Length: 454
Image (cartoon, rainbow, N blue to C red):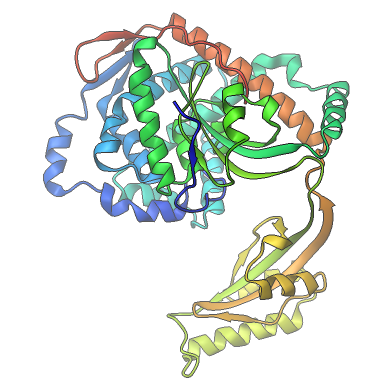
């Protein structure tokens, strides 16, 4: 194995579980032809595995495969070859769900609804939009809901198992901050990961082939956070694989050696680490403690056009939208006042903290850098509508300075990850698992070696 890396086909997408563009982009490829439906129907009720008496059907495997394809564009032969790996992930997920139920960890329908609403909000989907996109792709929304339920329940179980260790002491936080300050000027990396376990030696070649398929899709532009959410078995899967800013020494040595050589935006080759294979992407690099930037919070009001505007012959609706934008610009004197645009039919957006030096085009960057706080801009006309922007806050600070909250969260995440690996290995050792997909029944399970780092 080499440590070579390759740049992706395009920049990685923002952290999210499912991106609206990816949802729309592969729907046509995923919807089965009418002639295929009957053949698929004959297979869906077959038993793929039995996990401590609970049945995992081939329908569940197929549905999860289609969800992956929808997320990552893994269609056709490659997606079909993923079935064995998907089944293993479903077996582990079933073990987690059983343990959550045994320990009576509550996960309510309201928890699932809140998570779905968050996904929709972060991807610009209307309420119910995620369900509709899944249904159009031929995927039962319960496939995603079950995955979310398992993730939420498992995370709550791990926090409960930590007990007093879930409370990171002030002394521990201060020690972490002192170490961070001592590293000022040394390299650190913004990394995301996907961890695919190898639970027995006989699986290694097969898992490595699957990991290579995943890497090929990532390099073709599949969003890393989506694939991590679907397939990674690290706790960072809940965050789309995001490890945050990290020094190389806190990674597995095999991963650190690769990350130090990677260009920004690259996707690694498969990296063999204790317990399985890891894929990483390097999003950015910087010097610890040194990253001064101006951060903005903004509010955007968008008055959409019906059809694209012809500057020489705007329609009556388009003229009215331009007038509404002008009135908003002239009358509002605070970010709170931007709410008035909603009554006029505008869409309000709050993109969260925005780094000024990353805004493009430069004309927009100069505008936002000079706007008085709370005073909206003049209407900005595009072919699709009119936008008015207000800057709510502007602050220059050192983004590389680790806060006590960040230190506490990083220390807690490491503890949760350790407990997660230990508990899952124990569940795998004790489980009665019968695999039937692809041939005769064979026992599954066995102890996976410990994995360090992350």
